[in-house]
Amino acid sequence: MRYLKEVKKCSGVLVVSVNDDTSVRQLKGEGRPINKINYRVEILASLDFVDYVLVYSELDVVNYLDVLKPEIYVKGADYNLETMNQTERRTVEDYKGHIVFLQKTENMSTTSLIKKIKE
Image 1 (cartoon, rainbow, N blue to C red):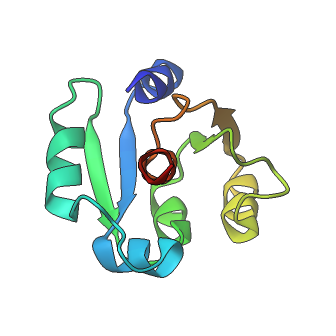
Image 2 (tube, rainbow, N blue to C red):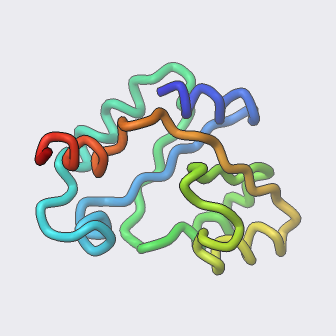
């Protein structure tokens, strides 16, 4: 949550985009997501600093970046300009947006929690 609060400080309106269950499965593999989309959206929407939650089924958010054109597009610091989706990068750069990488809360991702449980 600290991660999302930091994002809100960077912008006036915070739109959190979330992959639907099918696209998460395509990106992360069988057994994912752990929490279904309705639950994930409910949690995000309940946070007072989240203005909108956008659910998408594509593997990237290029179509939404093209429409919304956020002044600031935020990715987790596990990415950088070279490792992020290059189509997303070009889209944001084309409309003169800024890409910001923010550190996520350590060991709180679903992937790291699954790894910890298995250990």
